[in-house]
Length: 271
Image 1 (tube, one colour):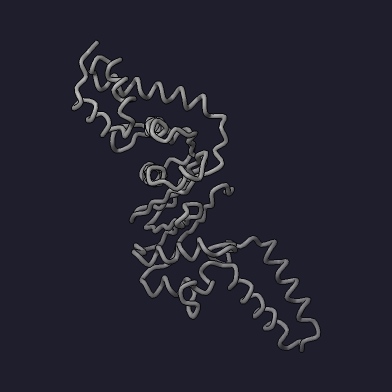
Image 2 (cartoon, helix red, strand yellow; image 1 turned 180 degrees about the vertical axis):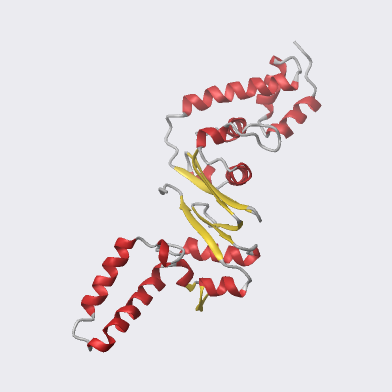
């Protein structure tokens, strides 16, 4: 049996974050070869992940990332709320979002085969994380938006949002993301993105409510009602949550940019 030093064990622990006994056992089996020990650990944990795959991953969090080229989100699932709120899982979720932003890959199976900056594949990273967390971990969905971006995730990790803009939105972009995360109804970035069927229904209702008004001002009354309707549902026209005297578009303009896209994710939601 190869003699395994405390220094070898500590070095592999620092690389993997795994328990001392797991690391030492793998090093002993690999006769002190660190690369082989890592392979043994991944094989062992991959097998355990497969066994645990049937466990319901009903909890999770949204990972977020944004830079001057793109913004991305990743919904990462786990079994318990305890894991969903710990720092290791939060870091993992954000890593997945950053990798999505870098690669542009949003198909989950293809994404798992991509290579991280440290040389591991995403799948290897998930297996390594399982070795520490000991829960079923899965990537449920990924999204990426091209353009200078900003992001925000609520403190519980279950609600998050991203935006892109024609210029770097800086710190103010995060405030708009907070507005999106806290607003229950947003039907589009602008009026053109709202479902035409819903617009037609709203116009019909506005016209019905305006029956009996003088004919020469009827169109203006309906238009006014529709302006208010859009103002409640279109992101750029909504009163900004941090200062309702200005619209979201007005706040963005004050800070030197215009919004080009947005998206909100909630754990367990659908695209």
